[in-house]
Image (cartoon, rainbow, N blue to C red; front, side, top):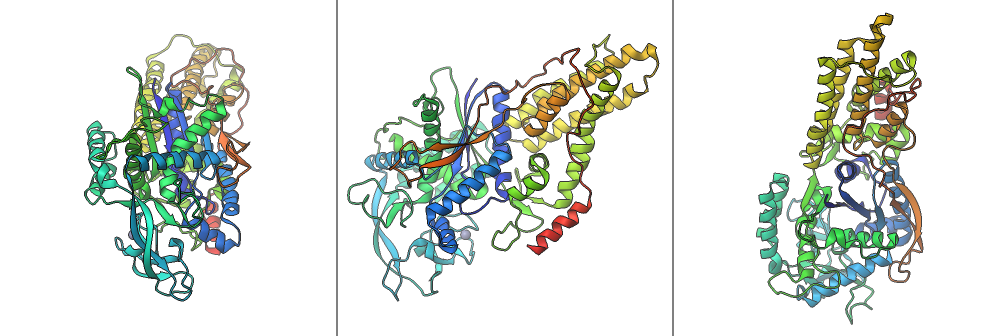
Length: 607
Ligand SMILES: [Zn+2]
Protein backbone atom coordinates (compact mmCIF):
# COMPACT_ATOMS: atom_id res chain seq x y z
CA UNK A 1 0.00 0.00 0.00
CA UNK A 2 1.25 3.44 -0.93
CA UNK A 3 0.36 6.94 0.12
CA UNK A 4 -0.94 8.57 -3.07
CA UNK A 5 -1.22 12.35 -3.30
CA UNK A 6 -3.61 13.21 -6.11
CA UNK A 7 -2.91 16.89 -6.73
CA UNK A 8 -5.44 18.31 -9.14
CA UNK A 9 -5.03 21.63 -11.00
CA UNK A 10 -6.87 24.52 -9.37
CA UNK A 11 -9.69 25.83 -11.56
CA UNK A 12 -9.52 29.58 -11.92
CA UNK A 13 -12.52 31.34 -10.37
CA UNK A 14 -13.04 34.10 -12.95
CA UNK A 15 -16.08 32.41 -14.51
CA UNK A 16 -17.93 29.11 -14.84
CA UNK A 17 -15.80 26.21 -16.12
CA UNK A 18 -16.32 24.73 -19.57
CA UNK A 19 -16.03 21.05 -20.39
CA UNK A 20 -12.49 21.51 -21.74
CA UNK A 21 -11.34 22.32 -18.19
CA UNK A 22 -12.79 19.19 -16.60
CA UNK A 23 -11.56 17.05 -19.50
CA UNK A 24 -7.98 18.08 -18.79
CA UNK A 25 -7.69 17.93 -15.01
CA UNK A 26 -11.01 16.89 -13.46
CA UNK A 27 -12.28 13.56 -14.70
CA UNK A 28 -8.84 11.94 -15.31
CA UNK A 29 -7.69 12.73 -11.76
CA UNK A 30 -10.93 11.33 -10.33
CA UNK A 31 -10.68 8.08 -12.33
CA UNK A 32 -7.09 7.66 -11.12
CA UNK A 33 -7.92 8.47 -7.48
CA UNK A 34 -10.95 6.20 -7.38
CA UNK A 35 -8.98 3.33 -8.93
CA UNK A 36 -6.07 3.81 -6.50
CA UNK A 37 -8.47 3.67 -3.54
CA UNK A 38 -10.05 0.50 -4.96
CA UNK A 39 -6.57 -0.99 -5.37
CA UNK A 40 -6.00 -0.49 -1.64
CA UNK A 41 -3.89 2.68 -1.58
CA UNK A 42 -4.28 5.57 0.83
CA UNK A 43 -5.27 8.46 -1.45
CA UNK A 44 -5.37 12.14 -0.57
CA UNK A 45 -7.04 14.09 -3.39
CA UNK A 46 -6.89 17.86 -3.03
CA UNK A 47 -7.56 21.00 -5.02
CA UNK A 48 -9.56 24.23 -4.85
CA UNK A 49 -10.33 27.39 -6.72
CA UNK A 50 -7.42 29.64 -7.68
CA UNK A 51 -8.63 33.14 -6.84
CA UNK A 52 -5.78 35.61 -7.11
CA UNK A 53 -4.16 37.30 -10.08
CA UNK A 54 -4.98 39.65 -12.87
CA UNK A 55 -7.91 37.94 -14.67
CA UNK A 56 -9.98 37.89 -11.46
CA UNK A 57 -9.51 41.64 -11.14
CA UNK A 58 -10.30 42.22 -14.80
CA UNK A 59 -13.51 40.16 -14.51
CA UNK A 60 -14.45 41.87 -11.22
CA UNK A 61 -13.92 45.30 -12.77
CA UNK A 62 -16.10 44.32 -15.73
CA UNK A 63 -18.84 43.04 -13.41
CA UNK A 64 -18.64 46.05 -11.09
CA UNK A 65 -17.94 43.92 -8.00
CA UNK A 66 -14.93 43.40 -5.74
CA UNK A 67 -12.41 40.67 -6.48
CA UNK A 68 -13.54 38.78 -3.39
CA UNK A 69 -17.20 38.97 -4.41
CA UNK A 70 -16.36 37.65 -7.86
CA UNK A 71 -14.31 34.80 -6.37
CA UNK A 72 -17.12 33.95 -3.92
CA UNK A 73 -19.57 33.67 -6.81
CA UNK A 74 -17.52 31.42 -9.04
CA UNK A 75 -16.04 29.33 -6.23
CA UNK A 76 -19.64 28.34 -5.38
CA UNK A 77 -20.52 27.63 -9.04
CA UNK A 78 -17.40 25.50 -9.55
CA UNK A 79 -17.96 23.56 -6.30
CA UNK A 80 -21.47 22.62 -7.47
CA UNK A 81 -20.22 21.57 -10.92
CA UNK A 82 -17.45 19.35 -9.56
CA UNK A 83 -19.68 17.72 -6.92
CA UNK A 84 -22.29 16.92 -9.55
CA UNK A 85 -19.61 15.50 -11.80
CA UNK A 86 -18.75 13.16 -8.89
CA UNK A 87 -15.13 14.26 -8.43
CA UNK A 88 -14.07 12.58 -5.19
CA UNK A 89 -11.93 15.24 -3.51
CA UNK A 90 -10.90 14.75 0.08
CA UNK A 91 -10.76 18.51 0.17
CA UNK A 92 -11.54 21.09 -2.48
CA UNK A 93 -10.96 24.54 -0.96
CA UNK A 94 -9.84 28.02 -2.08
CA UNK A 95 -6.67 30.13 -2.22
CA UNK A 96 -8.29 32.98 -0.26
CA UNK A 97 -8.46 31.08 3.07
CA UNK A 98 -6.45 32.18 6.07
CA UNK A 99 -4.79 28.76 6.13
CA UNK A 100 -3.55 29.18 2.55
CA UNK A 101 -2.19 32.68 3.22
CA UNK A 102 -0.24 31.40 6.24
CA UNK A 103 1.20 28.39 4.39
CA UNK A 104 2.17 30.46 1.33
CA UNK A 105 3.85 33.05 3.56
CA UNK A 106 5.76 30.34 5.44
CA UNK A 107 7.12 29.06 2.12
CA UNK A 108 8.05 32.54 0.95
CA UNK A 109 9.85 33.40 4.20
CA UNK A 110 11.88 30.18 4.23
CA UNK A 111 12.75 30.37 0.53
CA UNK A 112 13.85 33.98 1.17
CA UNK A 113 15.83 33.02 4.29
CA UNK A 114 17.58 30.25 2.35
CA UNK A 115 18.74 32.83 -0.20
CA UNK A 116 16.63 31.85 -3.20
CA UNK A 117 14.35 34.90 -3.25
CA UNK A 118 16.46 37.72 -4.63
CA UNK A 119 15.42 41.37 -4.58
CA UNK A 120 15.94 43.04 -7.93
CA UNK A 121 15.23 46.37 -9.47
CA UNK A 122 12.98 45.93 -12.44
CA UNK A 123 10.84 47.99 -14.76
CA UNK A 124 7.30 48.86 -13.64
CA UNK A 125 4.77 50.52 -15.93
CA UNK A 126 3.17 53.89 -15.34
CA UNK A 127 0.51 55.65 -17.34
CA UNK A 128 2.08 58.75 -18.95
CA UNK A 129 -1.21 60.66 -18.94
CA UNK A 130 -1.98 60.18 -15.23
CA UNK A 131 1.44 59.39 -13.78
CA UNK A 132 -0.09 56.48 -11.84
CA UNK A 133 1.17 52.91 -11.63
CA UNK A 134 -0.30 50.74 -14.36
CA UNK A 135 -0.82 47.25 -12.87
CA UNK A 136 0.18 44.25 -14.97
CA UNK A 137 -3.46 43.43 -15.63
CA UNK A 138 -3.93 46.67 -17.53
CA UNK A 139 -1.06 46.08 -19.93
CA UNK A 140 -1.35 43.94 -23.01
CA UNK A 141 0.69 43.46 -26.13
CA UNK A 142 2.10 40.87 -28.48
CA UNK A 143 3.65 37.77 -26.92
CA UNK A 144 7.38 37.67 -27.72
CA UNK A 145 7.29 33.85 -27.80
CA UNK A 146 4.19 32.89 -29.81
CA UNK A 147 3.23 36.33 -31.22
CA UNK A 148 -0.30 36.12 -29.76
CA UNK A 149 -1.53 39.74 -30.09
CA UNK A 150 -3.45 39.89 -26.78
CA UNK A 151 -0.90 38.61 -24.28
CA UNK A 152 -1.14 40.08 -20.78
CA UNK A 153 1.62 41.70 -18.79
CA UNK A 154 1.98 38.65 -16.55
CA UNK A 155 1.23 35.70 -18.79
CA UNK A 156 0.35 34.74 -22.35
CA UNK A 157 -2.92 32.83 -22.36
CA UNK A 158 -2.13 31.40 -25.77
CA UNK A 159 1.20 29.68 -25.08
CA UNK A 160 1.04 29.69 -21.28
CA UNK A 161 4.44 31.32 -20.79
CA UNK A 162 5.00 33.63 -17.87
CA UNK A 163 5.84 37.15 -18.99
CA UNK A 164 6.89 40.49 -17.62
CA UNK A 165 5.24 43.61 -19.02
CA UNK A 166 8.60 44.68 -20.49
CA UNK A 167 8.70 41.43 -22.52
CA UNK A 168 5.64 42.44 -24.55
CA UNK A 169 6.03 43.72 -28.09
CA UNK A 170 4.09 46.98 -28.56
CA UNK A 171 2.80 47.14 -24.95
CA UNK A 172 -0.33 49.24 -24.47
CA UNK A 173 -2.67 50.26 -21.68
CA UNK A 174 -5.99 48.43 -21.68
CA UNK A 175 -7.58 51.54 -20.16
CA UNK A 176 -6.85 54.04 -22.90
CA UNK A 177 -4.53 52.36 -25.39
CA UNK A 178 -1.54 54.59 -24.63
CA UNK A 179 1.98 53.19 -24.49
CA UNK A 180 3.10 52.82 -20.87
CA UNK A 181 6.41 54.21 -19.69
CA UNK A 182 8.56 51.98 -17.55
CA UNK A 183 10.17 53.14 -14.32
CA UNK A 184 12.24 51.29 -11.75
CA UNK A 185 10.44 49.20 -9.12
CA UNK A 186 11.57 46.54 -6.61
CA UNK A 187 10.51 42.89 -6.79
CA UNK A 188 11.55 39.49 -5.52
CA UNK A 189 12.79 36.96 -8.04
CA UNK A 190 13.03 33.22 -7.49
CA UNK A 191 16.66 32.34 -8.20
CA UNK A 192 15.92 29.52 -10.62
CA UNK A 193 19.51 29.31 -11.95
CA UNK A 194 20.62 28.39 -8.40
CA UNK A 195 18.07 25.57 -8.43
CA UNK A 196 18.69 24.38 -12.00
CA UNK A 197 21.17 21.68 -10.98
CA UNK A 198 18.78 20.13 -8.47
CA UNK A 199 15.88 20.45 -10.91
CA UNK A 200 17.90 18.75 -13.65
CA UNK A 201 18.84 15.84 -11.38
CA UNK A 202 15.22 15.36 -10.39
CA UNK A 203 14.05 15.44 -14.03
CA UNK A 204 16.75 12.96 -15.09
CA UNK A 205 15.64 10.61 -12.34
CA UNK A 206 12.01 11.03 -13.41
CA UNK A 207 12.96 10.37 -17.03
CA UNK A 208 14.73 7.18 -15.97
CA UNK A 209 11.55 6.01 -14.21
CA UNK A 210 9.99 5.89 -17.68
CA UNK A 211 6.54 6.82 -16.41
CA UNK A 212 6.17 10.41 -17.66
CA UNK A 213 4.59 11.14 -20.98
CA UNK A 214 7.58 11.73 -23.30
CA UNK A 215 6.45 15.18 -24.47
CA UNK A 216 6.07 16.38 -20.86
CA UNK A 217 9.55 15.28 -19.77
CA UNK A 218 11.13 16.73 -22.96
CA UNK A 219 9.33 20.05 -22.53
CA UNK A 220 10.42 20.21 -18.88
CA UNK A 221 14.06 19.47 -19.70
CA UNK A 222 14.07 21.96 -22.57
CA UNK A 223 12.87 24.90 -20.45
CA UNK A 224 15.78 24.24 -18.06
CA UNK A 225 18.19 25.31 -20.80
CA UNK A 226 16.89 28.89 -20.81
CA UNK A 227 16.39 29.20 -17.06
CA UNK A 228 16.48 32.67 -15.51
CA UNK A 229 15.23 34.29 -12.32
CA UNK A 230 11.44 34.78 -12.31
CA UNK A 231 9.54 37.53 -10.52
CA UNK A 232 7.48 36.07 -7.65
CA UNK A 233 5.94 39.38 -6.58
CA UNK A 234 3.79 41.71 -8.62
CA UNK A 235 2.43 45.25 -8.72
CA UNK A 236 -1.11 44.28 -7.84
CA UNK A 237 -3.37 44.99 -4.86
CA UNK A 238 -5.22 41.62 -4.77
CA UNK A 239 -3.32 38.65 -3.40
CA UNK A 240 -1.18 37.50 -0.51
CA UNK A 241 0.91 40.17 1.25
CA UNK A 242 4.68 39.75 1.05
CA UNK A 243 5.61 38.54 4.56
CA UNK A 244 8.70 40.68 5.15
CA UNK A 245 9.14 43.85 7.19
CA UNK A 246 8.72 46.91 5.01
CA UNK A 247 6.83 44.92 2.35
CA UNK A 248 3.89 43.49 4.24
CA UNK A 249 2.32 46.94 4.66
CA UNK A 250 2.66 47.83 0.97
CA UNK A 251 -0.84 47.35 -0.41
CA UNK A 252 0.25 47.55 -4.04
CA UNK A 253 2.69 44.63 -3.94
CA UNK A 254 1.56 41.02 -3.57
CA UNK A 255 2.87 37.50 -4.12
CA UNK A 256 2.59 36.45 -7.76
CA UNK A 257 -0.53 34.32 -8.29
CA UNK A 258 1.41 31.32 -9.59
CA UNK A 259 3.79 31.38 -6.61
CA UNK A 260 0.81 30.94 -4.31
CA UNK A 261 -1.48 28.77 -6.48
CA UNK A 262 0.89 25.78 -6.62
CA UNK A 263 1.36 26.02 -2.84
CA UNK A 264 -2.37 25.23 -2.72
CA UNK A 265 -1.61 21.51 -3.03
CA UNK A 266 0.26 21.69 0.27
CA UNK A 267 -2.06 24.14 2.03
CA UNK A 268 -5.15 22.12 1.05
CA UNK A 269 -3.51 18.98 2.47
CA UNK A 270 -2.79 20.86 5.69
CA UNK A 271 -6.33 22.26 5.84
CA UNK A 272 -7.71 18.75 5.27
CA UNK A 273 -5.63 17.37 8.16
CA UNK A 274 -6.63 20.22 10.46
CA UNK A 275 -10.29 19.57 9.68
CA UNK A 276 -9.96 15.83 10.41
CA UNK A 277 -8.72 16.63 13.93
CA UNK A 278 -5.27 15.13 13.25
CA UNK A 279 -3.42 18.31 12.16
CA UNK A 280 -0.07 16.66 11.39
CA UNK A 281 -1.52 13.89 9.23
CA UNK A 282 -0.76 15.67 5.92
CA UNK A 283 2.89 14.77 6.52
CA UNK A 284 2.19 11.14 5.53
CA UNK A 285 1.78 12.36 1.93
CA UNK A 286 4.35 15.15 1.93
CA UNK A 287 7.40 14.24 3.97
CA UNK A 288 9.73 11.54 2.58
CA UNK A 289 8.40 8.08 3.34
CA UNK A 290 10.10 5.93 5.96
CA UNK A 291 12.15 2.91 4.86
CA UNK A 292 9.85 0.27 3.36
CA UNK A 293 7.01 2.74 2.79
CA UNK A 294 6.02 4.55 -0.34
CA UNK A 295 4.72 8.05 -0.88
CA UNK A 296 3.86 9.12 -4.42
CA UNK A 297 2.59 12.46 -5.74
CA UNK A 298 0.67 12.78 -9.02
CA UNK A 299 -0.16 16.19 -10.46
CA UNK A 300 -2.96 16.58 -13.03
CA UNK A 301 -3.25 19.60 -15.34
CA UNK A 302 -3.55 20.86 -18.89
CA UNK A 303 -0.45 21.31 -21.03
CA UNK A 304 -0.49 25.11 -20.63
CA UNK A 305 0.44 24.63 -16.97
CA UNK A 306 3.38 22.21 -17.29
CA UNK A 307 5.95 24.95 -16.56
CA UNK A 308 4.42 25.70 -13.20
CA UNK A 309 4.37 22.05 -12.11
CA UNK A 310 7.65 20.76 -13.54
CA UNK A 311 9.73 23.86 -12.85
CA UNK A 312 8.26 26.59 -10.60
CA UNK A 313 6.66 24.32 -7.96
CA UNK A 314 9.57 21.85 -7.72
CA UNK A 315 11.91 24.87 -7.53
CA UNK A 316 9.89 26.30 -4.63
CA UNK A 317 10.03 22.91 -2.86
CA UNK A 318 13.79 22.54 -3.42
CA UNK A 319 14.44 26.12 -2.25
CA UNK A 320 12.27 25.51 0.81
CA UNK A 321 14.36 22.42 1.62
CA UNK A 322 17.62 24.32 1.08
CA UNK A 323 18.49 21.89 -1.70
CA UNK A 324 19.89 24.32 -4.31
CA UNK A 325 23.31 25.87 -4.93
CA UNK A 326 22.97 28.31 -2.01
CA UNK A 327 22.29 25.52 0.51
CA UNK A 328 19.98 26.36 3.41
CA UNK A 329 17.75 24.34 5.70
CA UNK A 330 14.09 23.31 5.61
CA UNK A 331 11.42 25.34 7.37
CA UNK A 332 8.73 24.08 9.76
CA UNK A 333 7.18 21.71 7.22
CA UNK A 334 10.45 19.82 6.73
CA UNK A 335 11.64 18.35 3.44
CA UNK A 336 8.64 18.11 1.07
CA UNK A 337 8.19 15.53 -1.68
CA UNK A 338 8.70 16.59 -5.29
CA UNK A 339 6.15 15.43 -7.90
CA UNK A 340 6.42 11.76 -8.77
CA UNK A 341 4.66 12.44 -12.03
CA UNK A 342 3.34 15.49 -13.85
CA UNK A 343 0.35 14.10 -15.74
CA UNK A 344 -0.41 16.72 -18.34
CA UNK A 345 -3.25 16.44 -20.79
CA UNK A 346 -3.61 18.15 -24.15
CA UNK A 347 -6.55 20.37 -25.10
CA UNK A 348 -10.16 19.49 -25.79
CA UNK A 349 -11.42 21.59 -28.68
CA UNK A 350 -15.00 22.22 -29.66
CA UNK A 351 -15.24 20.87 -33.15
CA UNK A 352 -12.21 22.33 -34.89
CA UNK A 353 -11.99 25.45 -32.70
CA UNK A 354 -10.68 26.30 -29.24
CA UNK A 355 -13.26 26.87 -26.53
CA UNK A 356 -13.74 30.60 -26.10
CA UNK A 357 -15.99 32.09 -23.42
CA UNK A 358 -15.57 35.55 -24.90
CA UNK A 359 -16.73 34.46 -28.34
CA UNK A 360 -19.64 32.34 -27.08
CA UNK A 361 -18.01 29.21 -28.50
CA UNK A 362 -18.25 27.33 -25.27
CA UNK A 363 -20.05 24.52 -23.43
CA UNK A 364 -20.32 24.97 -19.69
CA UNK A 365 -20.11 21.95 -17.39
CA UNK A 366 -23.31 23.11 -15.68
CA UNK A 367 -25.36 23.07 -18.89
CA UNK A 368 -24.16 19.63 -20.03
CA UNK A 369 -24.83 18.16 -16.56
CA UNK A 370 -28.30 19.73 -16.41
CA UNK A 371 -29.32 18.27 -19.78
CA UNK A 372 -27.56 14.87 -19.77
CA UNK A 373 -26.31 14.11 -16.25
CA UNK A 374 -22.74 13.08 -15.47
CA UNK A 375 -22.44 9.68 -17.18
CA UNK A 376 -22.34 10.62 -20.89
CA UNK A 377 -19.90 13.45 -20.18
CA UNK A 378 -17.57 11.35 -18.02
CA UNK A 379 -17.75 8.57 -20.59
CA UNK A 380 -16.92 10.90 -23.48
CA UNK A 381 -13.96 12.42 -21.62
CA UNK A 382 -12.57 8.99 -20.63
CA UNK A 383 -13.08 7.39 -24.03
CA UNK A 384 -12.26 10.32 -26.32
CA UNK A 385 -10.56 12.95 -24.15
CA UNK A 386 -7.33 14.84 -24.90
CA UNK A 387 -5.01 12.38 -23.18
CA UNK A 388 -1.90 12.51 -25.37
CA UNK A 389 -3.08 14.68 -28.26
CA UNK A 390 -5.71 17.36 -28.71
CA UNK A 391 -9.16 15.90 -29.24
CA UNK A 392 -12.40 17.42 -30.46
CA UNK A 393 -15.77 17.41 -28.76
CA UNK A 394 -18.68 17.14 -31.18
CA UNK A 395 -22.32 16.66 -30.29
CA UNK A 396 -22.62 13.95 -32.91
CA UNK A 397 -19.88 11.87 -31.27
CA UNK A 398 -21.22 12.62 -27.78
CA UNK A 399 -24.67 11.29 -28.67
CA UNK A 400 -23.33 8.42 -30.76
CA UNK A 401 -21.06 7.17 -27.96
CA UNK A 402 -23.88 7.48 -25.44
CA UNK A 403 -26.35 5.57 -27.59
CA UNK A 404 -24.17 2.89 -29.16
CA UNK A 405 -21.66 2.26 -26.36
CA UNK A 406 -23.28 3.15 -23.03
CA UNK A 407 -26.91 2.31 -23.88
CA UNK A 408 -26.56 -0.45 -26.50
CA UNK A 409 -23.37 -1.97 -25.04
CA UNK A 410 -23.12 -1.75 -21.28
CA UNK A 411 -26.71 -0.71 -20.43
CA UNK A 412 -28.14 -3.46 -22.61
CA UNK A 413 -25.99 -6.13 -20.98
CA UNK A 414 -27.11 -5.05 -17.50
CA UNK A 415 -30.72 -4.77 -18.56
CA UNK A 416 -31.13 -8.08 -20.35
CA UNK A 417 -29.26 -10.03 -17.68
CA UNK A 418 -31.37 -8.59 -14.86
CA UNK A 419 -34.62 -8.94 -16.87
CA UNK A 420 -34.02 -12.64 -17.61
CA UNK A 421 -33.13 -13.33 -13.97
CA UNK A 422 -36.17 -11.41 -12.69
CA UNK A 423 -38.61 -13.13 -15.05
CA UNK A 424 -37.27 -16.66 -14.67
CA UNK A 425 -35.92 -16.87 -11.11
CA UNK A 426 -36.67 -13.65 -9.22
CA UNK A 427 -33.28 -14.03 -7.56
CA UNK A 428 -29.69 -14.78 -8.53
CA UNK A 429 -29.77 -18.51 -9.39
CA UNK A 430 -27.13 -21.01 -8.27
CA UNK A 431 -24.71 -22.29 -10.93
CA UNK A 432 -24.59 -25.97 -11.83
CA UNK A 433 -21.56 -27.52 -13.51
CA UNK A 434 -19.65 -24.95 -15.57
CA UNK A 435 -18.96 -25.58 -19.25
CA UNK A 436 -15.87 -24.26 -20.97
CA UNK A 437 -17.82 -21.35 -22.49
CA UNK A 438 -18.73 -20.29 -18.92
CA UNK A 439 -15.18 -20.70 -17.62
CA UNK A 440 -13.84 -18.71 -20.59
CA UNK A 441 -16.05 -15.67 -20.10
CA UNK A 442 -15.45 -15.61 -16.34
CA UNK A 443 -11.70 -15.76 -16.94
CA UNK A 444 -11.87 -13.03 -19.59
CA UNK A 445 -13.64 -10.72 -17.15
CA UNK A 446 -11.25 -11.53 -14.30
CA UNK A 447 -8.27 -10.71 -16.54
CA UNK A 448 -9.83 -7.26 -16.94
CA UNK A 449 -8.83 -6.41 -13.36
CA UNK A 450 -5.17 -6.71 -14.38
CA UNK A 451 -5.36 -5.12 -17.82
CA UNK A 452 -7.72 -2.23 -16.99
CA UNK A 453 -6.03 -1.54 -13.65
CA UNK A 454 -2.57 -1.49 -15.20
CA UNK A 455 -3.69 1.00 -17.86
CA UNK A 456 -5.33 3.35 -15.34
CA UNK A 457 -2.21 3.19 -13.16
CA UNK A 458 -0.17 4.35 -16.16
CA UNK A 459 -2.63 7.16 -17.02
CA UNK A 460 -3.77 5.49 -20.21
CA UNK A 461 -7.44 5.95 -19.50
CA UNK A 462 -8.65 5.90 -23.10
CA UNK A 463 -7.13 2.45 -23.55
CA UNK A 464 -8.36 1.41 -20.10
CA UNK A 465 -12.02 2.20 -20.74
CA UNK A 466 -11.78 0.70 -24.23
CA UNK A 467 -10.48 -2.50 -22.63
CA UNK A 468 -13.30 -2.49 -20.04
CA UNK A 469 -15.86 -2.01 -22.84
CA UNK A 470 -14.21 -4.80 -24.85
CA UNK A 471 -14.76 -7.07 -21.83
CA UNK A 472 -18.42 -5.96 -21.74
CA UNK A 473 -18.62 -6.98 -25.40
CA UNK A 474 -17.26 -10.44 -24.52
CA UNK A 475 -20.09 -10.89 -22.02
CA UNK A 476 -22.70 -9.70 -24.53
CA UNK A 477 -21.27 -12.27 -26.97
CA UNK A 478 -21.54 -14.95 -24.28
CA UNK A 479 -25.28 -14.33 -23.96
CA UNK A 480 -25.67 -14.37 -27.74
CA UNK A 481 -23.82 -17.70 -27.98
CA UNK A 482 -25.45 -19.45 -25.00
CA UNK A 483 -28.97 -18.13 -25.79
CA UNK A 484 -30.48 -18.47 -22.28
CA UNK A 485 -33.64 -16.73 -23.58
CA UNK A 486 -34.36 -19.81 -25.72
CA UNK A 487 -34.18 -22.27 -22.81
CA UNK A 488 -37.92 -22.75 -22.37
CA UNK A 489 -37.87 -26.50 -21.74
CA UNK A 490 -37.99 -27.50 -18.01
CA UNK A 491 -35.03 -29.82 -18.71
CA UNK A 492 -32.94 -26.74 -19.58
CA UNK A 493 -33.73 -24.89 -16.36
CA UNK A 494 -30.53 -25.83 -14.55
CA UNK A 495 -28.43 -24.81 -17.54
CA UNK A 496 -30.35 -21.54 -17.78
CA UNK A 497 -29.65 -20.91 -14.10
CA UNK A 498 -25.96 -21.54 -14.66
CA UNK A 499 -25.74 -19.18 -17.63
CA UNK A 500 -27.63 -16.42 -15.80
CA UNK A 501 -25.51 -16.93 -12.68
CA UNK A 502 -22.38 -16.57 -14.81
CA UNK A 503 -23.87 -13.52 -16.55
CA UNK A 504 -24.72 -11.90 -13.19
CA UNK A 505 -21.16 -12.52 -12.00
CA UNK A 506 -19.78 -10.97 -15.17
CA UNK A 507 -22.07 -7.93 -14.90
CA UNK A 508 -21.06 -7.45 -11.27
CA UNK A 509 -17.35 -7.64 -12.19
CA UNK A 510 -17.75 -5.36 -15.22
CA UNK A 511 -19.47 -2.86 -12.95
CA UNK A 512 -16.40 -2.86 -10.72
CA UNK A 513 -14.13 -2.42 -13.78
CA UNK A 514 -16.18 0.57 -14.98
CA UNK A 515 -16.77 2.09 -11.53
CA UNK A 516 -13.76 4.50 -11.54
CA UNK A 517 -14.98 5.94 -14.86
CA UNK A 518 -18.74 5.87 -14.24
CA UNK A 519 -19.33 5.97 -10.46
CA UNK A 520 -22.93 7.24 -10.73
CA UNK A 521 -23.90 4.46 -13.14
CA UNK A 522 -22.04 1.96 -10.95
CA UNK A 523 -24.36 2.84 -8.08
CA UNK A 524 -27.43 2.23 -10.26
CA UNK A 525 -26.10 -1.10 -11.59
CA UNK A 526 -25.39 -2.11 -8.00
CA UNK A 527 -29.09 -1.58 -7.20
CA UNK A 528 -30.18 -3.49 -10.34
CA UNK A 529 -28.10 -6.43 -9.03
CA UNK A 530 -30.01 -6.32 -5.75
CA UNK A 531 -27.45 -4.30 -3.79
CA UNK A 532 -28.33 -1.67 -1.21
CA UNK A 533 -26.76 1.72 -0.56
CA UNK A 534 -23.91 3.31 -2.51
CA UNK A 535 -21.36 1.12 -4.26
CA UNK A 536 -19.04 4.04 -5.07
CA UNK A 537 -18.91 6.75 -2.38
CA UNK A 538 -19.78 10.21 -3.65
CA UNK A 539 -18.41 13.64 -2.74
CA UNK A 540 -20.53 16.28 -1.05
CA UNK A 541 -20.45 20.05 -0.71
CA UNK A 542 -20.25 21.26 2.86
CA UNK A 543 -20.14 24.77 4.32
CA UNK A 544 -17.23 25.41 6.68
CA UNK A 545 -15.81 28.40 8.52
CA UNK A 546 -12.32 29.77 7.89
CA UNK A 547 -9.87 28.15 10.32
CA UNK A 548 -7.76 31.32 10.47
CA UNK A 549 -10.13 34.26 10.21
CA UNK A 550 -8.20 37.46 9.78
CA UNK A 551 -5.21 35.82 8.08
CA UNK A 552 -6.78 35.48 4.61
CA UNK A 553 -9.09 37.48 2.40
CA UNK A 554 -11.84 37.60 5.06
CA UNK A 555 -13.94 34.67 3.93
CA UNK A 556 -16.01 33.79 6.97
CA UNK A 557 -17.90 30.72 5.75
CA UNK A 558 -17.32 29.01 2.40
CA UNK A 559 -18.25 25.77 0.62
CA UNK A 560 -15.75 22.92 0.29
CA UNK A 561 -15.98 19.54 -1.39
CA UNK A 562 -15.20 16.59 0.81
CA UNK A 563 -16.34 13.01 1.28
CA UNK A 564 -15.89 9.77 3.13
CA UNK A 565 -14.43 7.24 0.73
CA UNK A 566 -13.51 4.53 3.27
CA UNK A 567 -16.28 2.24 1.95
CA UNK A 568 -14.79 2.19 -1.57
CA UNK A 569 -15.11 -1.37 -2.97
CA UNK A 570 -12.03 -3.45 -3.68
CA UNK A 571 -10.59 -3.83 -7.17
CA UNK A 572 -11.32 -7.55 -7.53
CA UNK A 573 -13.99 -10.03 -8.47
CA UNK A 574 -16.43 -10.53 -5.58
CA UNK A 575 -18.73 -13.62 -5.87
CA UNK A 576 -22.39 -12.71 -6.41
CA UNK A 577 -24.76 -13.86 -3.71
CA UNK A 578 -27.01 -16.77 -4.73
CA UNK A 579 -30.63 -16.13 -3.74
CA UNK A 580 -30.36 -12.32 -3.76
CA UNK A 581 -33.72 -10.98 -5.04
CA UNK A 582 -33.62 -9.33 -8.49
CA UNK A 583 -36.57 -7.31 -9.79
CA UNK A 584 -37.28 -5.95 -13.24
CA UNK A 585 -34.60 -3.29 -13.82
CA UNK A 586 -35.01 0.39 -14.55
CA UNK A 587 -32.84 1.47 -17.51
CA UNK A 588 -29.33 2.40 -16.38
CA UNK A 589 -28.72 4.94 -19.17
CA UNK A 590 -30.87 7.28 -21.26
CA UNK A 591 -30.94 6.99 -25.02
CA UNK A 592 -31.12 10.32 -26.88
CA UNK A 593 -32.76 10.94 -30.20
CA UNK A 594 -30.17 11.96 -32.82
CA UNK A 595 -32.19 15.17 -33.36
CA UNK A 596 -30.59 16.36 -30.10
CA UNK A 597 -27.46 17.07 -32.15
CA UNK A 598 -29.27 19.69 -34.25
CA UNK A 599 -30.91 21.20 -31.18
CA UNK A 600 -27.55 21.61 -29.50
CA UNK A 601 -25.96 23.08 -32.61
CA UNK A 602 -28.85 25.54 -32.91
CA UNK A 603 -28.42 26.47 -29.25
CA UNK A 604 -24.75 27.20 -29.91
CA UNK A 605 -25.41 29.44 -32.89
CA UNK A 606 -28.02 31.36 -30.86
CA UNK A 607 -25.53 31.98 -28.06
ZN1 LIG B 1 2.50 33.37 -26.13
